[in-house]
Image (cartoon, rainbow, N blue to C red; front, side):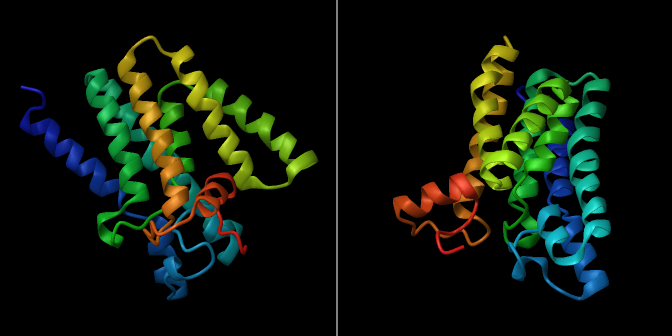
Length: 211
């Protein structure tokens, strides 16, 4: 059997758990506002930081990075689950964060959660190098964080096949990077009535042309 009943329950739990957005809950509880209607209109830490400051954003960032991303895969690895199961879990965690069943399939951009998952997969050195490299270029050249993020995603799309021999890992991560780019296109409005110029601008800069 491909997956037994217990494994299916774990996968459902992982998706539902990652669909819980700390950014939405904290902003709703402490500020009585809907994070999906203000700022960038997503529940990620960057939007929380922009609207409510560094303290709240740090909590949201750590929740997305460690609690959602790193810890679940570490635990599943420690418990001895197969590589295929770990890959399916990884994809569902990112999907739950970006397309929450609790918020009409809205969510965050998935960057920090993906980084957390990458840390669990042992990509600390590669992630640190790519982040630092493009952050330095951003500071001295293009001064746009969203563009740096795009370049980081593209970089990993090309280097992942050289980091893993197992095609399961390669397919897993490539699907995640495609999801990250797809989320930038549709945002949380799930509006696919876009022209080519808008699609390219959203992929590169994670914003509309008029922003």
